[in-house]
Length: 282
Image 1 (cartoon, one colour):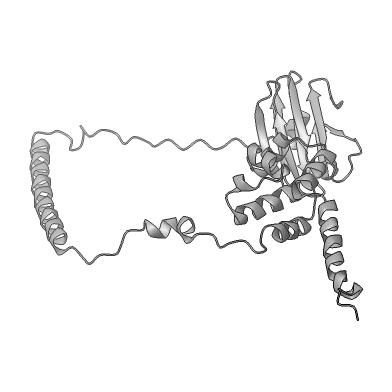
Image 2 (tube, rainbow, N blue to C red; image 1 turned 135 degrees about the vertical axis):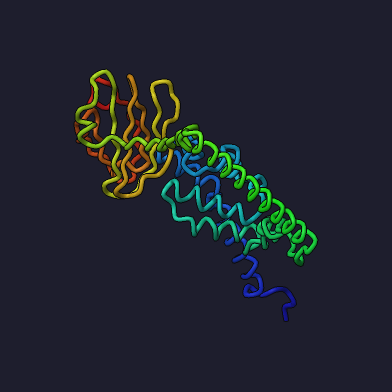
């Protein structure tokens, strides 16, 4: 009779080794995000500008270093944001993170979330002393105002007796200036009549939302944000406009009053430059 382990007893350990091999073969979270970003043609700077996640945190996550995120809650939020920016489903990545970092995130400390509640002043009972002082001041002020008004009436009567016109010395009422109205965004007709010595570019999100970045000829950022479907933006510069379209297939472009007929594919990232002599893609 054998006292050793049977093949059935050893099988669970073999299954565990196979499972460990599968875990090692699966790409890491940071590697998956980095490969998706490169495949989308985006730089770390592009991702940071689109998601508002700092560049050092993007670099750290792509290196599978999550310590800079500030905890599990923020780490999961960053993973979800970066995955959506490169058109990935964040659910598998979050599940992979939970499997390697202890499942559900630890509860966030209550103090930072309720900072406003902590600094809110406590309710106190009515301060009767202050109320009495305020009432006395109000009575004194009213008596003084009445006496001052009586003096003004006497002076007015004296002026009438002398033949002067009451209120002649009163200063004219100063008319308040109306606040300047914001300048409206150039319309389609304004684009069509754009000056020849400038380049005018209109970006319209016709078929969906898209992240847009625009810079002038000096490389200065003039717009960085997401256009929702139906929104549009118009940019003008003296010589050149640089564009980055996060989802070029959802965008209609008009350059110097003419529509650009390039066949952009949905989900594609396009970097374009237009000048005064266009519409020709730079």
